Image (cartoon, rainbow, N blue to C red; front, side):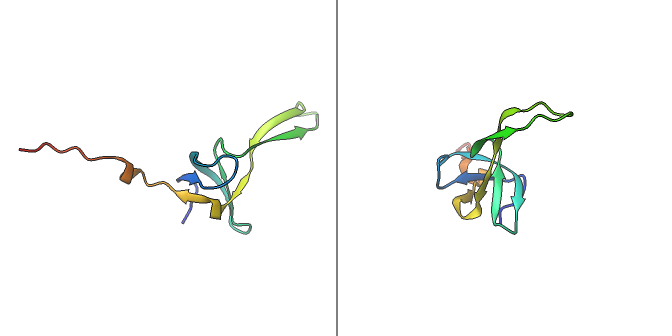
Length: 82
């Protein structure tokens, strides 16, 4: 099960084979936001509090296009042989 804070690998799309950390989950839509993955440009209107312009932010990716990365399997154990 994919949860917030876990490391995942993208299986399909423009960011295929990239890895990142889950920062947000949308359970109703079966989607997740991954840090620095699936970046999109968003046009923001100027308000009294914020300056407007074009900003880059993460967009959601469907859970079927993600796979958990197990860091334990990547690490190779080095043992001294006697």
